[in-house]
Length: 266
Image (cartoon, rainbow, N blue to C red; front, top):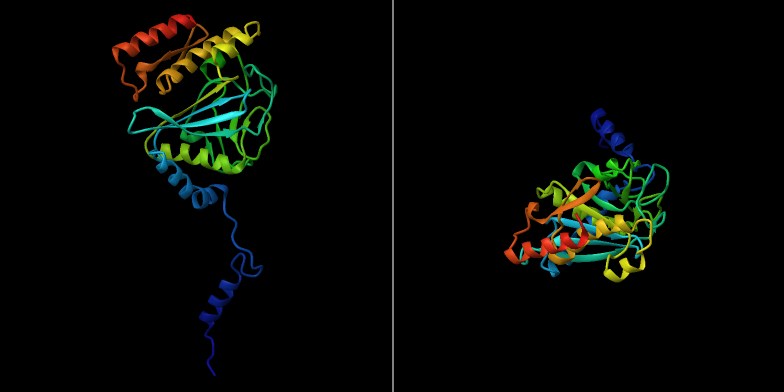
């Protein structure tokens, strides 16, 4: 009869005592591991069908009234951002208008930037990324708040929430763009689609002047399908298409930008 040596007995008991061996349970995967395994191949295939690439620069914009969040991806062929998908926002607290202070449970409006450090793969809301609120414009207006996110789990106290499947796709596009060398992803949040008709309906709103300023950035992207560079001056947002590295300006386009700026004010 074959006898086990002391060394072999130790190895057998070590294997039996590994987590899950006694219970029969498999190791649980993190949310990020799940989306890389289950979501990433399908996402890459969808992008390829549209002649787009995972890892290309990404632009995100959201509309509070319509409860929609769009992802746009830079096309190598056209040199413009192409609409990849429109996702339903399942929760967004507050009303139309900007976030003013900590605890008002209001989703922000304005022009925000996500960096790699603002990604949170360990979020209690599945996956999330921080919008960077308050930005410089918000601080100039003495607005306060923190931890404003785009995340999963369909709950909100001032954030924009989508379901877990959708945040998986959105998160992957942002993460892969950083891996490919991008430093930032712009996220522009509007109260509504800023068409002339919808702006006219809100002519007497308290926030009409603020929205008129937002509309300038909205119109620039609608015209060129390139996100403008955003700064602030004299407590207003200011926009410059020529500072975007992906934008090549022709004379006619320069004239059009001047017209857009004159229409929306200084």
